Picture (tube, rainbow, N blue to C red):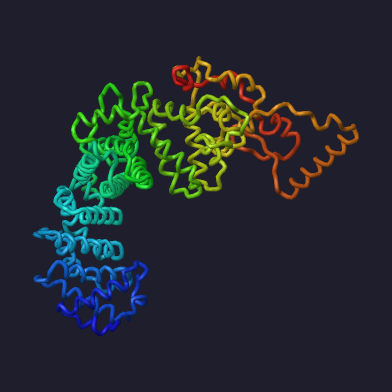
Length: 588
Protein backbone atom coordinates (compact mmCIF):
# COMPACT_ATOMS: atom_id res chain seq x y z
CA UNK A 1 0.00 0.00 0.00
CA UNK A 2 1.31 3.43 -0.98
CA UNK A 3 1.65 5.43 2.24
CA UNK A 4 2.26 8.64 0.31
CA UNK A 5 -1.22 8.44 -1.21
CA UNK A 6 -2.74 7.98 2.24
CA UNK A 7 -0.97 11.05 3.55
CA UNK A 8 -2.35 13.12 0.67
CA UNK A 9 -6.05 12.34 1.29
CA UNK A 10 -8.36 15.34 1.55
CA UNK A 11 -11.78 13.74 1.95
CA UNK A 12 -12.49 13.30 -1.74
CA UNK A 13 -14.71 10.49 -2.90
CA UNK A 14 -11.80 8.67 -4.56
CA UNK A 15 -9.94 8.69 -1.22
CA UNK A 16 -12.61 6.52 0.38
CA UNK A 17 -11.55 3.37 -1.49
CA UNK A 18 -7.98 3.82 -0.28
CA UNK A 19 -9.19 4.27 3.32
CA UNK A 20 -11.33 1.13 3.17
CA UNK A 21 -8.42 -0.84 1.72
CA UNK A 22 -6.24 0.22 4.66
CA UNK A 23 -8.99 -0.60 7.16
CA UNK A 24 -9.58 -4.07 5.71
CA UNK A 25 -5.88 -4.90 5.69
CA UNK A 26 -5.24 -3.89 9.31
CA UNK A 27 -8.61 -4.69 10.89
CA UNK A 28 -7.12 -7.32 13.21
CA UNK A 29 -6.29 -6.02 16.70
CA UNK A 30 -2.79 -7.52 16.50
CA UNK A 31 -1.73 -4.54 14.36
CA UNK A 32 -1.12 -2.40 17.41
CA UNK A 33 1.92 -0.30 16.55
CA UNK A 34 3.20 1.79 13.66
CA UNK A 35 5.87 -0.69 12.59
CA UNK A 36 3.26 -3.39 12.01
CA UNK A 37 1.29 -0.87 9.97
CA UNK A 38 4.36 -0.13 7.88
CA UNK A 39 4.56 3.49 9.04
CA UNK A 40 7.44 5.55 10.28
CA UNK A 41 6.98 7.98 13.17
CA UNK A 42 6.73 10.89 10.74
CA UNK A 43 4.28 9.08 8.47
CA UNK A 44 2.14 8.11 11.48
CA UNK A 45 1.89 11.74 12.60
CA UNK A 46 1.13 13.00 9.08
CA UNK A 47 -1.57 10.38 8.53
CA UNK A 48 -3.14 11.11 11.91
CA UNK A 49 -3.30 14.85 11.23
CA UNK A 50 -4.74 14.61 7.71
CA UNK A 51 -7.44 12.17 8.84
CA UNK A 52 -8.38 14.41 11.78
CA UNK A 53 -8.51 17.38 9.41
CA UNK A 54 -10.96 15.50 7.19
CA UNK A 55 -13.11 14.54 10.20
CA UNK A 56 -13.39 18.19 11.19
CA UNK A 57 -15.29 18.94 7.97
CA UNK A 58 -18.90 19.64 8.91
CA UNK A 59 -20.37 18.40 5.61
CA UNK A 60 -18.85 14.92 5.88
CA UNK A 61 -21.47 12.17 5.42
CA UNK A 62 -21.89 9.79 8.40
CA UNK A 63 -20.97 6.71 6.34
CA UNK A 64 -17.80 8.38 5.09
CA UNK A 65 -16.92 9.62 8.57
CA UNK A 66 -17.27 6.05 9.87
CA UNK A 67 -14.54 4.85 7.49
CA UNK A 68 -12.17 7.61 8.59
CA UNK A 69 -12.96 6.87 12.23
CA UNK A 70 -12.11 3.22 11.67
CA UNK A 71 -8.68 4.33 10.48
CA UNK A 72 -8.29 6.47 13.61
CA UNK A 73 -9.31 3.45 15.69
CA UNK A 74 -6.53 1.40 14.07
CA UNK A 75 -3.95 4.13 14.65
CA UNK A 76 -5.06 4.63 18.26
CA UNK A 77 -3.88 1.13 19.17
CA UNK A 78 -0.29 2.43 19.25
CA UNK A 79 0.02 3.90 22.74
CA UNK A 80 3.37 5.68 22.37
CA UNK A 81 2.56 7.27 19.02
CA UNK A 82 -0.95 8.35 20.05
CA UNK A 83 0.32 10.12 23.16
CA UNK A 84 2.65 12.17 20.95
CA UNK A 85 0.04 13.33 18.41
CA UNK A 86 -3.22 13.52 20.41
CA UNK A 87 -4.52 16.97 21.30
CA UNK A 88 -7.60 18.28 23.06
CA UNK A 89 -8.89 19.55 19.72
CA UNK A 90 -8.71 16.05 18.28
CA UNK A 91 -10.55 14.68 21.31
CA UNK A 92 -13.32 17.25 20.94
CA UNK A 93 -13.71 16.34 17.27
CA UNK A 94 -14.21 12.66 18.06
CA UNK A 95 -16.51 13.54 20.97
CA UNK A 96 -18.76 15.50 18.61
CA UNK A 97 -18.87 12.57 16.18
CA UNK A 98 -19.80 10.29 19.08
CA UNK A 99 -22.87 12.47 19.67
CA UNK A 100 -21.53 13.47 23.08
CA UNK A 101 -21.03 17.15 22.32
CA UNK A 102 -23.04 20.09 23.62
CA UNK A 103 -25.66 19.93 20.86
CA UNK A 104 -24.97 16.56 19.26
CA UNK A 105 -28.00 14.65 18.04
CA UNK A 106 -28.54 11.26 16.46
CA UNK A 107 -30.73 11.81 13.44
CA UNK A 108 -30.81 8.35 11.85
CA UNK A 109 -29.18 4.92 11.81
CA UNK A 110 -26.20 6.16 9.80
CA UNK A 111 -25.48 8.75 12.46
CA UNK A 112 -25.73 6.06 15.14
CA UNK A 113 -23.25 3.87 13.26
CA UNK A 114 -20.84 6.79 13.01
CA UNK A 115 -21.30 7.55 16.72
CA UNK A 116 -20.61 3.92 17.60
CA UNK A 117 -17.32 3.96 15.66
CA UNK A 118 -16.35 7.24 17.32
CA UNK A 119 -16.98 5.65 20.73
CA UNK A 120 -14.62 2.83 19.79
CA UNK A 121 -11.98 5.46 19.05
CA UNK A 122 -12.66 7.17 22.37
CA UNK A 123 -12.33 3.86 24.20
CA UNK A 124 -8.89 3.27 22.70
CA UNK A 125 -7.78 6.83 23.39
CA UNK A 126 -9.01 6.83 27.00
CA UNK A 127 -7.28 3.51 27.61
CA UNK A 128 -4.01 4.63 26.02
CA UNK A 129 -3.69 8.30 26.90
CA UNK A 130 -3.75 10.23 30.16
CA UNK A 131 -4.57 13.33 28.10
CA UNK A 132 -7.79 11.69 26.93
CA UNK A 133 -8.65 10.78 30.51
CA UNK A 134 -8.05 14.39 31.55
CA UNK A 135 -10.45 15.64 28.87
CA UNK A 136 -13.12 13.29 30.18
CA UNK A 137 -12.60 14.60 33.70
CA UNK A 138 -12.75 18.28 32.75
CA UNK A 139 -15.80 18.04 30.49
CA UNK A 140 -19.34 16.86 31.16
CA UNK A 141 -18.92 13.67 29.15
CA UNK A 142 -19.94 11.34 31.98
CA UNK A 143 -23.14 13.30 32.49
CA UNK A 144 -23.84 13.21 28.74
CA UNK A 145 -23.22 9.48 28.63
CA UNK A 146 -25.66 8.94 31.47
CA UNK A 147 -28.19 11.19 29.73
CA UNK A 148 -27.93 9.10 26.57
CA UNK A 149 -28.40 5.90 28.56
CA UNK A 150 -31.57 7.23 30.19
CA UNK A 151 -33.38 6.64 26.89
CA UNK A 152 -32.04 3.29 25.63
CA UNK A 153 -35.07 2.70 23.43
CA UNK A 154 -33.92 5.56 21.18
CA UNK A 155 -30.54 3.93 20.58
CA UNK A 156 -29.58 0.98 18.47
CA UNK A 157 -28.23 -1.99 20.36
CA UNK A 158 -24.64 -1.55 19.16
CA UNK A 159 -24.52 2.13 20.12
CA UNK A 160 -26.18 1.47 23.46
CA UNK A 161 -23.59 -1.21 24.26
CA UNK A 162 -20.77 1.05 23.12
CA UNK A 163 -21.91 3.90 25.37
CA UNK A 164 -22.09 1.56 28.37
CA UNK A 165 -18.64 0.12 27.63
CA UNK A 166 -17.17 3.60 27.33
CA UNK A 167 -18.71 4.56 30.67
CA UNK A 168 -17.22 1.46 32.26
CA UNK A 169 -13.77 2.20 30.88
CA UNK A 170 -13.80 5.81 32.05
CA UNK A 171 -15.03 5.00 35.56
CA UNK A 172 -12.66 2.05 35.92
CA UNK A 173 -9.55 4.01 34.93
CA UNK A 174 -10.20 7.41 36.46
CA UNK A 175 -10.95 7.60 40.19
CA UNK A 176 -12.20 11.18 40.12
CA UNK A 177 -14.59 10.38 37.28
CA UNK A 178 -15.88 7.34 39.14
CA UNK A 179 -16.68 9.34 42.24
CA UNK A 180 -18.18 12.17 40.23
CA UNK A 181 -20.49 9.76 38.42
CA UNK A 182 -21.98 8.56 41.72
CA UNK A 183 -21.83 11.68 43.85
CA UNK A 184 -22.60 14.39 41.29
CA UNK A 185 -24.65 12.55 38.68
CA UNK A 186 -26.32 9.77 40.71
CA UNK A 187 -25.16 7.09 38.28
CA UNK A 188 -26.46 4.20 40.40
CA UNK A 189 -30.03 5.42 40.12
CA UNK A 190 -29.60 6.25 36.43
CA UNK A 191 -28.30 2.80 35.49
CA UNK A 192 -30.87 0.87 37.51
CA UNK A 193 -33.71 1.24 34.93
CA UNK A 194 -31.46 -0.33 32.29
CA UNK A 195 -31.72 -3.62 34.14
CA UNK A 196 -35.46 -3.14 34.55
CA UNK A 197 -36.12 -2.42 30.89
CA UNK A 198 -33.84 -5.19 29.74
CA UNK A 199 -35.40 -7.80 31.96
CA UNK A 200 -38.95 -6.79 31.08
CA UNK A 201 -38.29 -6.93 27.36
CA UNK A 202 -36.63 -10.32 27.68
CA UNK A 203 -39.18 -12.04 29.85
CA UNK A 204 -42.52 -12.30 28.05
CA UNK A 205 -44.27 -15.63 27.97
CA UNK A 206 -43.24 -16.34 24.37
CA UNK A 207 -39.54 -15.90 25.16
CA UNK A 208 -38.84 -17.33 28.62
CA UNK A 209 -35.09 -17.01 28.16
CA UNK A 210 -33.15 -13.82 27.60
CA UNK A 211 -31.90 -13.23 24.10
CA UNK A 212 -28.34 -12.39 23.11
CA UNK A 213 -28.78 -8.61 22.91
CA UNK A 214 -30.47 -8.45 26.30
CA UNK A 215 -27.74 -10.51 27.96
CA UNK A 216 -24.98 -8.42 26.38
CA UNK A 217 -26.56 -5.23 27.67
CA UNK A 218 -27.07 -6.65 31.16
CA UNK A 219 -23.45 -7.83 31.37
CA UNK A 220 -22.10 -4.42 30.36
CA UNK A 221 -24.35 -2.60 32.84
CA UNK A 222 -23.27 -4.97 35.61
CA UNK A 223 -19.64 -4.15 34.81
CA UNK A 224 -20.31 -0.43 35.20
CA UNK A 225 -22.16 -0.96 38.48
CA UNK A 226 -19.27 -3.06 39.74
CA UNK A 227 -16.81 -0.31 38.82
CA UNK A 228 -18.88 2.31 40.62
CA UNK A 229 -19.46 0.22 43.75
CA UNK A 230 -15.91 -1.04 44.10
CA UNK A 231 -14.69 2.54 43.80
CA UNK A 232 -16.86 3.56 46.70
CA UNK A 233 -15.45 0.84 48.95
CA UNK A 234 -12.02 2.46 49.13
CA UNK A 235 -11.69 4.99 51.97
CA UNK A 236 -10.12 8.22 50.83
CA UNK A 237 -11.08 7.63 47.20
CA UNK A 238 -12.86 10.96 46.91
CA UNK A 239 -12.00 14.57 47.52
CA UNK A 240 -12.94 16.45 50.68
CA UNK A 241 -15.80 18.20 48.90
CA UNK A 242 -17.13 14.91 47.56
CA UNK A 243 -16.69 13.30 50.97
CA UNK A 244 -18.94 15.94 52.49
CA UNK A 245 -21.65 15.27 49.94
CA UNK A 246 -21.24 11.54 50.26
CA UNK A 247 -22.02 11.52 53.97
CA UNK A 248 -20.54 8.11 54.59
CA UNK A 249 -18.32 6.27 52.11
CA UNK A 250 -19.97 3.02 51.11
CA UNK A 251 -17.77 0.45 52.76
CA UNK A 252 -18.95 -3.01 53.79
CA UNK A 253 -20.42 -3.11 57.29
CA UNK A 254 -20.89 0.65 57.48
CA UNK A 255 -24.01 2.76 57.24
CA UNK A 256 -24.91 4.08 53.81
CA UNK A 257 -26.10 7.46 52.73
CA UNK A 258 -29.88 6.92 52.42
CA UNK A 259 -30.06 7.77 48.71
CA UNK A 260 -27.28 5.36 47.78
CA UNK A 261 -28.56 2.82 50.28
CA UNK A 262 -31.86 2.61 48.41
CA UNK A 263 -30.11 2.33 45.05
CA UNK A 264 -27.83 -0.46 46.25
CA UNK A 265 -30.74 -2.43 47.73
CA UNK A 266 -32.67 -2.05 44.47
CA UNK A 267 -29.63 -3.20 42.48
CA UNK A 268 -29.21 -6.30 44.66
CA UNK A 269 -32.90 -7.07 44.17
CA UNK A 270 -32.40 -6.93 40.38
CA UNK A 271 -29.31 -9.11 40.68
CA UNK A 272 -31.36 -11.69 42.59
CA UNK A 273 -33.83 -11.86 39.71
CA UNK A 274 -31.01 -12.14 37.19
CA UNK A 275 -29.59 -15.09 39.11
CA UNK A 276 -32.95 -16.81 38.65
CA UNK A 277 -32.98 -16.06 34.91
CA UNK A 278 -31.41 -17.95 32.03
CA UNK A 279 -29.90 -16.74 28.78
CA UNK A 280 -30.23 -18.20 25.31
CA UNK A 281 -27.14 -20.38 25.86
CA UNK A 282 -25.56 -21.97 28.92
CA UNK A 283 -22.33 -20.04 28.36
CA UNK A 284 -24.17 -16.71 28.36
CA UNK A 285 -26.09 -17.72 31.49
CA UNK A 286 -22.82 -18.48 33.26
CA UNK A 287 -21.35 -15.18 32.06
CA UNK A 288 -24.33 -13.20 33.33
CA UNK A 289 -24.32 -14.99 36.69
CA UNK A 290 -20.57 -14.45 36.99
CA UNK A 291 -20.94 -10.68 36.68
CA UNK A 292 -23.89 -10.73 39.08
CA UNK A 293 -21.70 -12.39 41.70
CA UNK A 294 -18.82 -10.00 41.01
CA UNK A 295 -21.16 -7.12 41.79
CA UNK A 296 -22.38 -8.77 45.00
CA UNK A 297 -18.80 -8.99 46.23
CA UNK A 298 -18.45 -5.22 46.50
CA UNK A 299 -21.87 -4.22 47.82
CA UNK A 300 -22.23 -3.54 51.56
CA UNK A 301 -23.28 -6.50 53.66
CA UNK A 302 -26.34 -4.60 54.83
CA UNK A 303 -27.77 -4.96 51.32
CA UNK A 304 -27.13 -8.70 50.96
CA UNK A 305 -30.28 -9.55 52.90
CA UNK A 306 -32.20 -8.54 49.77
CA UNK A 307 -30.92 -11.75 48.17
CA UNK A 308 -33.05 -13.79 50.56
CA UNK A 309 -36.41 -12.01 50.90
CA UNK A 310 -38.93 -13.12 53.45
CA UNK A 311 -41.93 -14.74 51.80
CA UNK A 312 -44.25 -12.82 54.08
CA UNK A 313 -42.95 -9.57 52.58
CA UNK A 314 -44.02 -10.56 49.08
CA UNK A 315 -40.97 -9.70 47.00
CA UNK A 316 -41.65 -7.78 43.81
CA UNK A 317 -41.01 -9.47 40.48
CA UNK A 318 -40.33 -7.58 37.29
CA UNK A 319 -39.75 -10.26 34.72
CA UNK A 320 -42.59 -11.40 32.52
CA UNK A 321 -44.21 -8.05 31.78
CA UNK A 322 -47.37 -7.64 33.85
CA UNK A 323 -47.84 -8.77 37.41
CA UNK A 324 -50.07 -11.64 36.38
CA UNK A 325 -47.54 -13.25 34.06
CA UNK A 326 -44.76 -12.66 36.55
CA UNK A 327 -46.75 -14.39 39.26
CA UNK A 328 -47.47 -17.29 36.92
CA UNK A 329 -43.81 -17.71 36.11
CA UNK A 330 -42.89 -17.45 39.78
CA UNK A 331 -45.29 -20.26 40.58
CA UNK A 332 -43.79 -22.38 37.85
CA UNK A 333 -40.32 -21.90 39.27
CA UNK A 334 -39.52 -24.18 42.15
CA UNK A 335 -38.69 -21.98 45.10
CA UNK A 336 -36.26 -23.13 47.76
CA UNK A 337 -37.73 -22.03 51.08
CA UNK A 338 -35.89 -22.17 54.39
CA UNK A 339 -37.47 -20.79 57.55
CA UNK A 340 -39.97 -18.73 55.56
CA UNK A 341 -37.18 -17.22 53.47
CA UNK A 342 -36.68 -17.56 49.72
CA UNK A 343 -33.20 -19.06 49.25
CA UNK A 344 -33.48 -19.74 45.52
CA UNK A 345 -30.81 -17.18 44.61
CA UNK A 346 -28.37 -18.79 47.04
CA UNK A 347 -29.05 -22.18 45.46
CA UNK A 348 -28.06 -20.70 42.10
CA UNK A 349 -24.88 -19.21 43.58
CA UNK A 350 -23.89 -22.55 45.14
CA UNK A 351 -24.63 -24.31 41.85
CA UNK A 352 -22.44 -21.75 40.07
CA UNK A 353 -19.58 -22.43 42.50
CA UNK A 354 -19.95 -26.18 42.10
CA UNK A 355 -19.92 -25.84 38.31
CA UNK A 356 -16.74 -23.76 38.43
CA UNK A 357 -15.04 -26.30 40.68
CA UNK A 358 -16.15 -29.22 38.51
CA UNK A 359 -14.78 -27.46 35.44
CA UNK A 360 -11.28 -27.76 36.92
CA UNK A 361 -11.00 -23.97 36.96
CA UNK A 362 -10.16 -23.80 40.64
CA UNK A 363 -6.47 -23.37 39.88
CA UNK A 364 -7.39 -20.10 38.17
CA UNK A 365 -8.19 -18.09 41.25
CA UNK A 366 -10.04 -15.28 39.47
CA UNK A 367 -12.67 -17.80 38.35
CA UNK A 368 -13.54 -18.96 41.86
CA UNK A 369 -12.51 -16.32 44.38
CA UNK A 370 -15.39 -13.86 43.71
CA UNK A 371 -18.14 -16.37 44.45
CA UNK A 372 -16.29 -17.76 47.49
CA UNK A 373 -15.66 -14.25 48.81
CA UNK A 374 -19.32 -13.40 48.36
CA UNK A 375 -20.40 -16.54 50.25
CA UNK A 376 -17.99 -15.82 53.10
CA UNK A 377 -19.40 -12.31 53.45
CA UNK A 378 -23.02 -13.43 53.21
CA UNK A 379 -22.61 -16.26 55.72
CA UNK A 380 -20.91 -13.97 58.21
CA UNK A 381 -23.59 -11.31 57.84
CA UNK A 382 -26.64 -13.55 58.28
CA UNK A 383 -27.24 -16.48 60.61
CA UNK A 384 -30.06 -17.77 58.42
CA UNK A 385 -27.90 -17.69 55.29
CA UNK A 386 -25.08 -19.46 57.12
CA UNK A 387 -27.35 -22.22 58.33
CA UNK A 388 -28.89 -22.76 54.91
CA UNK A 389 -25.55 -22.79 53.10
CA UNK A 390 -24.20 -25.23 55.66
CA UNK A 391 -27.08 -27.61 55.09
CA UNK A 392 -26.28 -27.50 51.39
CA UNK A 393 -22.51 -27.73 51.68
CA UNK A 394 -22.07 -29.76 54.88
CA UNK A 395 -25.15 -31.91 55.48
CA UNK A 396 -25.18 -34.33 58.45
CA UNK A 397 -22.50 -36.97 58.06
CA UNK A 398 -23.67 -40.38 56.93
CA UNK A 399 -21.05 -42.14 54.82
CA UNK A 400 -17.57 -41.54 56.24
CA UNK A 401 -15.84 -44.34 54.39
CA UNK A 402 -14.16 -41.77 52.12
CA UNK A 403 -11.87 -38.97 53.13
CA UNK A 404 -13.52 -35.52 53.21
CA UNK A 405 -11.52 -34.35 50.17
CA UNK A 406 -12.58 -37.34 48.06
CA UNK A 407 -15.75 -37.31 46.00
CA UNK A 408 -17.67 -34.88 43.82
CA UNK A 409 -19.73 -33.08 46.44
CA UNK A 410 -19.29 -29.37 47.06
CA UNK A 411 -17.89 -30.11 50.53
CA UNK A 412 -15.28 -32.43 49.01
CA UNK A 413 -14.25 -29.81 46.47
CA UNK A 414 -13.86 -27.14 49.15
CA UNK A 415 -11.95 -29.43 51.51
CA UNK A 416 -9.60 -30.32 48.67
CA UNK A 417 -8.92 -26.62 48.11
CA UNK A 418 -7.80 -26.32 51.75
CA UNK A 419 -4.49 -27.85 50.66
CA UNK A 420 -4.29 -26.02 47.33
CA UNK A 421 -0.96 -24.44 46.34
CA UNK A 422 -2.91 -21.31 45.40
CA UNK A 423 -2.83 -19.45 48.71
CA UNK A 424 -5.88 -17.32 47.98
CA UNK A 425 -8.04 -20.35 47.26
CA UNK A 426 -6.59 -22.21 50.23
CA UNK A 427 -7.44 -19.37 52.60
CA UNK A 428 -10.92 -18.69 51.19
CA UNK A 429 -12.06 -22.31 51.19
CA UNK A 430 -10.81 -22.85 54.74
CA UNK A 431 -12.41 -19.62 55.93
CA UNK A 432 -15.74 -20.48 54.31
CA UNK A 433 -15.87 -23.93 55.91
CA UNK A 434 -14.78 -22.49 59.26
CA UNK A 435 -17.59 -19.93 59.17
CA UNK A 436 -20.11 -22.59 58.14
CA UNK A 437 -19.05 -24.50 61.25
CA UNK A 438 -19.85 -21.36 63.25
CA UNK A 439 -16.13 -21.09 64.10
CA UNK A 440 -16.21 -24.33 66.06
CA UNK A 441 -12.82 -26.06 65.89
CA UNK A 442 -14.18 -29.48 66.86
CA UNK A 443 -16.92 -29.25 64.26
CA UNK A 444 -14.45 -28.19 61.57
CA UNK A 445 -12.20 -31.16 62.37
CA UNK A 446 -15.21 -33.45 62.27
CA UNK A 447 -16.19 -32.39 58.74
CA UNK A 448 -12.77 -31.77 57.16
CA UNK A 449 -10.22 -33.79 59.11
CA UNK A 450 -7.47 -32.37 61.29
CA UNK A 451 -4.88 -32.82 58.56
CA UNK A 452 -6.77 -30.65 56.08
CA UNK A 453 -7.59 -27.82 58.47
CA UNK A 454 -4.28 -27.75 60.36
CA UNK A 455 -3.02 -24.82 58.29
CA UNK A 456 -6.05 -22.67 59.14
CA UNK A 457 -5.94 -23.65 62.80
CA UNK A 458 -2.24 -22.82 62.97
CA UNK A 459 -2.84 -19.36 61.51
CA UNK A 460 -5.63 -18.78 64.03
CA UNK A 461 -3.65 -20.17 66.98
CA UNK A 462 -6.10 -23.05 67.45
CA UNK A 463 -3.97 -26.12 66.78
CA UNK A 464 -4.77 -27.49 70.22
CA UNK A 465 -8.49 -26.98 69.72
CA UNK A 466 -10.56 -25.15 72.30
CA UNK A 467 -13.03 -22.28 72.05
CA UNK A 468 -12.49 -19.25 69.86
CA UNK A 469 -13.80 -15.77 70.42
CA UNK A 470 -17.01 -15.40 68.45
CA UNK A 471 -17.31 -19.14 67.86
CA UNK A 472 -20.06 -21.57 68.74
CA UNK A 473 -20.82 -22.44 72.32
CA UNK A 474 -23.44 -24.48 74.06
CA UNK A 475 -24.98 -21.42 75.61
CA UNK A 476 -25.53 -19.22 72.58
CA UNK A 477 -26.98 -21.76 70.16
CA UNK A 478 -30.73 -22.13 70.03
CA UNK A 479 -30.53 -25.83 69.14
CA UNK A 480 -27.40 -27.00 70.93
CA UNK A 481 -29.37 -29.67 72.78
CA UNK A 482 -30.36 -31.38 69.52
CA UNK A 483 -28.30 -34.38 68.37
CA UNK A 484 -27.15 -33.78 64.81
CA UNK A 485 -25.34 -37.05 64.10
CA UNK A 486 -27.13 -39.59 61.93
CA UNK A 487 -27.53 -43.22 62.94
CA UNK A 488 -25.03 -44.27 60.27
CA UNK A 489 -22.41 -41.93 61.70
CA UNK A 490 -23.12 -42.88 65.30
CA UNK A 491 -22.33 -46.52 64.57
CA UNK A 492 -18.81 -45.79 63.34
CA UNK A 493 -18.00 -42.52 65.10
CA UNK A 494 -15.62 -44.18 67.52
CA UNK A 495 -13.68 -45.59 64.56
CA UNK A 496 -13.30 -42.30 62.66
CA UNK A 497 -9.72 -41.10 62.45
CA UNK A 498 -9.85 -37.38 63.39
CA UNK A 499 -6.72 -36.67 61.35
CA UNK A 500 -8.02 -38.07 58.07
CA UNK A 501 -11.69 -37.46 58.88
CA UNK A 502 -12.84 -40.86 57.66
CA UNK A 503 -13.72 -44.31 59.01
CA UNK A 504 -10.77 -46.66 59.38
CA UNK A 505 -11.54 -50.30 60.22
CA UNK A 506 -9.52 -52.07 62.88
CA UNK A 507 -6.33 -53.36 61.35
CA UNK A 508 -3.97 -55.98 62.72
CA UNK A 509 -0.98 -54.60 64.58
CA UNK A 510 2.05 -55.10 62.29
CA UNK A 511 4.36 -55.69 65.25
CA UNK A 512 2.30 -58.53 66.72
CA UNK A 513 4.08 -61.07 64.56
CA UNK A 514 7.54 -59.64 65.30
CA UNK A 515 9.99 -60.99 67.82
CA UNK A 516 11.38 -58.73 70.51
CA UNK A 517 14.65 -58.45 68.59
CA UNK A 518 12.81 -57.35 65.44
CA UNK A 519 10.82 -54.77 67.39
CA UNK A 520 13.98 -53.37 68.91
CA UNK A 521 15.69 -53.26 65.51
CA UNK A 522 12.78 -51.37 63.88
CA UNK A 523 12.59 -48.96 66.83
CA UNK A 524 16.31 -48.14 66.62
CA UNK A 525 16.01 -47.75 62.85
CA UNK A 526 13.13 -45.29 63.28
CA UNK A 527 14.99 -43.30 65.94
CA UNK A 528 18.07 -43.03 63.74
CA UNK A 529 15.99 -41.87 60.78
CA UNK A 530 14.28 -39.19 62.88
CA UNK A 531 17.59 -38.09 64.35
CA UNK A 532 19.05 -37.72 60.87
CA UNK A 533 16.12 -35.58 59.73
CA UNK A 534 16.33 -33.39 62.84
CA UNK A 535 20.10 -32.88 62.55
CA UNK A 536 19.80 -31.96 58.86
CA UNK A 537 17.11 -29.41 59.70
CA UNK A 538 14.49 -31.12 57.52
CA UNK A 539 12.08 -31.38 60.46
CA UNK A 540 11.92 -29.78 63.87
CA UNK A 541 9.99 -31.17 66.87
CA UNK A 542 7.34 -28.82 68.18
CA UNK A 543 4.39 -28.57 70.48
CA UNK A 544 1.41 -26.24 70.69
CA UNK A 545 2.10 -23.30 72.96
CA UNK A 546 -0.28 -21.42 75.20
CA UNK A 547 -1.15 -19.09 72.30
CA UNK A 548 -2.12 -22.02 70.09
CA UNK A 549 0.88 -21.54 67.80
CA UNK A 550 3.56 -24.20 67.11
CA UNK A 551 6.55 -23.83 69.43
CA UNK A 552 9.93 -25.53 68.69
CA UNK A 553 11.22 -28.04 71.23
CA UNK A 554 14.85 -28.35 72.23
CA UNK A 555 14.75 -31.61 74.20
CA UNK A 556 12.80 -34.83 74.61
CA UNK A 557 11.83 -33.72 78.11
CA UNK A 558 9.95 -30.77 76.68
CA UNK A 559 8.09 -33.09 74.33
CA UNK A 560 7.06 -35.31 77.23
CA UNK A 561 5.90 -32.32 79.25
CA UNK A 562 3.86 -31.11 76.28
CA UNK A 563 1.84 -34.32 76.39
CA UNK A 564 2.85 -35.91 73.08
CA UNK A 565 2.79 -34.74 69.51
CA UNK A 566 0.92 -31.46 69.41
CA UNK A 567 -1.15 -32.35 72.45
CA UNK A 568 -4.02 -33.19 70.09
CA UNK A 569 -7.01 -34.99 71.51
CA UNK A 570 -9.91 -36.63 69.76
CA UNK A 571 -13.06 -34.44 69.95
CA UNK A 572 -15.32 -35.43 72.81
CA UNK A 573 -18.87 -36.62 72.04
CA UNK A 574 -20.28 -33.56 73.79
CA UNK A 575 -18.26 -31.22 71.61
CA UNK A 576 -19.17 -33.07 68.44
CA UNK A 577 -22.83 -32.94 69.36
CA UNK A 578 -22.68 -29.19 69.97
CA UNK A 579 -24.09 -28.32 66.59
CA UNK A 580 -26.35 -25.33 66.36
CA UNK A 581 -27.34 -25.83 62.75
CA UNK A 582 -28.26 -29.51 62.34
CA UNK A 583 -31.36 -29.75 64.43
CA UNK A 584 -34.34 -31.78 63.33
CA UNK A 585 -35.95 -28.89 61.47
CA UNK A 586 -32.76 -28.24 59.49
CA UNK A 587 -32.48 -31.82 58.29
CA UNK A 588 -35.94 -31.85 56.78
